[in-house]
Image (cartoon, rainbow, N blue to C red; front, side, top):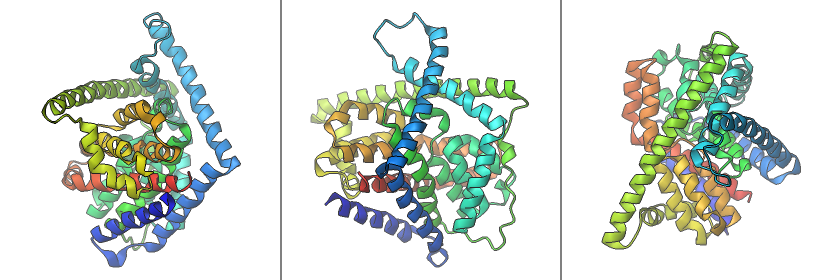
Length: 394
C-alpha cells in the first residue's frame, strides 16, 4: 500500500512543479525523464543489490576511517577534558568537520575534485541536454555545498538570467557539503546519507528546471572549475581547510545552542498554554506530506514533526531529534526521514546563498534574495522527492 502511495506522491510532487512552471511549453521533459530514470536505477542498485550495498558500505567505511583519524587530532587537543564513557556532541561529531574539511580542501587543490566535477558534470549535460552551468553546479554541490560551489561559475554569474539563477540556487540549497558528511554518518545510517547526496543532485534539477525552464540555443559556455581552487600550495590548502572546518563547526554549534534552546522555550510556553509541544504541532502540519511520501501511517506524525523541525531549524537539529525516536520508527519511516534530512533546505539557507553570491556579484545576490520562500519550497520539494524514491525500495 505504501508503495502505491509513494508512486502517487512522486506524481503529486511533479504535478506541483508543473503547476508552478513559468513556461510549460519549454519544459525539457526529455531531461526530466532521463534524470528520473537514473534516480530509479541508481536507488535500486544502491539499496537493493549486493554490489550496491557493498559499495555504499565501502564508502561508509572510508568516511568512518577518516573520522577515526580525525578523532586522533581531536584527542590530542582536548584529550583529558572529557570524563571516560561520555561523548559530547561538539567533540565527537562537530570537531570532525575540521579534519574532513581539510581533506576536501587538499583534494580540491590537487585537482581531484575539479576533474571529477568536470567529467561528471559534462557527462550529465550531454546526456540530458541541460546547460553546462546548471549541470556543473548540480554535481559540484554534492561536494562543496551551498557556498563554495558558486566560485566555479563566478565568471558566468553576470550573464545568467533569473530562471538559471533559480536553478543553480536550488541545487545549492538542495545539497550538502562533503566536508560535513563525517558528522552526518555519526547520526544516521551512512547508506541513506550517500544515497540522498546522489538523488538530491537530480531532484533539485528536476524540480527547478520544471518550474523555471531554460533553453540555451548554443551552449558554448566554458565553466572554469579551476576557479574553485583558491589555494597556492598544499600547505595553504591544509590551513584553509582546517580554518574553514573550524568555522563551520563553531557556526553549527552556535546554531544548535540557539535553536535547541529556543525549541525548549517554545515547548515550555506551548505546554503551559495548550499542553502540546512544537514537534507535535509540526507533526500535524507535515503529516499529510509524510503520508504521500509513502511513510507508514503509524510513523507519519513523528516523520512530519522531524520534517518541520528541520525546516525551521536545520538538518543537525532534525538528525539529533531523529536519534531520540529512531527505535520507534519502522525501517521505511527511518529511511524516508533520514533521506529527507540530508540537505540544506531550511530558512537560514536563503541568506547563506544570497550572502555567498553577494561576494561575487551584488546584483545577482539581490535577485536570489527575491526568490525567498519559493526557493526554500522548491528545495524542500526536491528533498521530499528523493526521500519518496528511497521509500519505494525499502
